[in-house]
Length: 269
Ligand SMILES: C[S@@+](CC[C@H](N)C(=O)[O-])C[C@H]1O[C@@H](n2cnc3c(N)ncnc32)[C@H](O)[C@@H]1O
Image 1 (tube, rainbow, N blue to C red):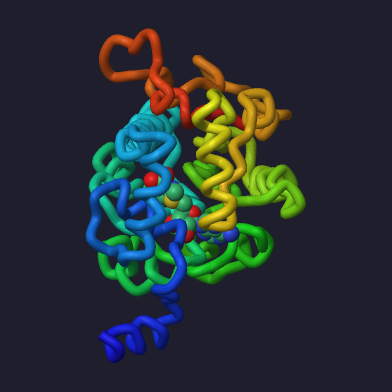
Image 2: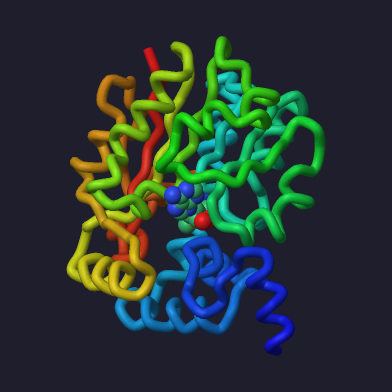
């Protein structure tokens, strides 16, 4: 076990503290996580028993959103910021199912994504993985793999799915969003999903995230909507994830879990 931990340490992976990517892997019922990550999720389950379902709503809307972007919106290149560990129906699977020429760059700052994800995510020469920090948008925009795969004269799908709530207010999430949207041309789209301050339980969950993981800022629907300022917000706007263009009938009487994350897509005019 000690040797095993030394191996992880040499990859830059700290198994003594929960990581965002690995705790998300827990709720997606993946295998790339450690005891400390599962213990964190056990604490969240105490305030939001549906947290595993919330991860599913997020993955499902990611699929619907990318299908829309690659389909109706005609986007052929995607910058997936905070991509997470590979799971089912990753962005390039969905986009390339619509058009195999779609190009995707995955960006994440967790070394576990590099350790486990590179081979799976960079499956073909139209996908790439970059280890970088969202808080340094200029470095991401200048990264050679980003420059190889993304043509900044053509519309880009900028994805910040399940990541902006991991930025504190003083880290300037709006500036970061604006930096990416300023770098892409008209016709580009911004896709955001975000933990929402939508119930008493969400306030409790926020406290647990901040205390145990160090990040997790649950913003109001108005704060999340403000990320899209200056862009054309597409119907149905910024809504609880199960209400964003559901494949079947829209659910009614949403539960705490169904309201825990909000999201939307907007087009740059
Ligand atoms: C909840 S996961 C979301 C994964 C995927 N986008 C999805 O929605 O299914 C958030 C991801 O953002 C990454 N992340 C958090 N803060 C980051 C930062 N400052 N820079 C880059 N990646 C970050 C985490 O490592 C994690 O993999």
